[in-house]
Length: 319
Image (tube, rainbow, N blue to C red):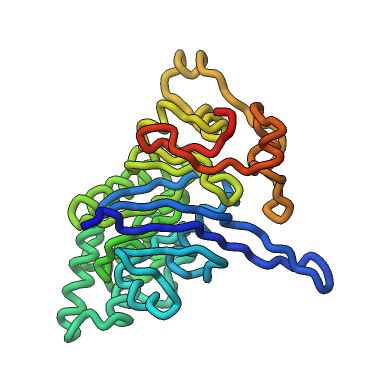
């Protein structure tokens, strides 16, 4: 039996944007992304705002219909026809715990909605027991069941969202920046809870985030995105200690270090210029307009993501 749970092959998501009276230009939010996630593994996906991280997660779950490419889950391709059945196995925790919960529904109804949709109980007593068990899993009390979302803090709301995702007993969860809207102390609680749930339930995560320290803590492997493409992918420790791509090197140089002596001795790699518009992508390598190693070859060809040893993948001609 293969350990691979999810395989994404050359996934593309292009949104048509009106740029004139009768003209539409494709905005290449995701442009040929490929990766695998093993059973019980966490793959971290990092990159700056607008690089396509969230679009990757939503397209995998077919919240957006993909332009092209394949998503294979547990040996079966995800299509329009089977996505409803697949959603029992694949779920999502959304970024904003304030707008992803219905303000008119009680906590019990929010967590119970997936059970209703997929008919996962035989009577109301069993439904109630499952909901209370899920609430206990994520550290909520039974008396919270009759309350509404606005009565909770951000961290508690995110726990409600996680309980809702776990209701159908999924094998895979897309975590779309699940801690970015929370205070630092609450972030640590939620991250630890994700790790505990993974140990208990064996669930796999695609963990999307900005914060490289958080991603390094929770992930076994990390993929770095820039302008719709994955530019580097490796084991978390390997990527942190030996970044190959100039973009990854710049990201890691910006991570704050609590030791002032090390922080002073470290060289900060500041990128020049702005991120190009995905409507007007540069020719060749998408990063070449900000790269200090760019050559004429970078303007002509787009580098492939190639293995540099021990599964450390990088898309760069010169590094």
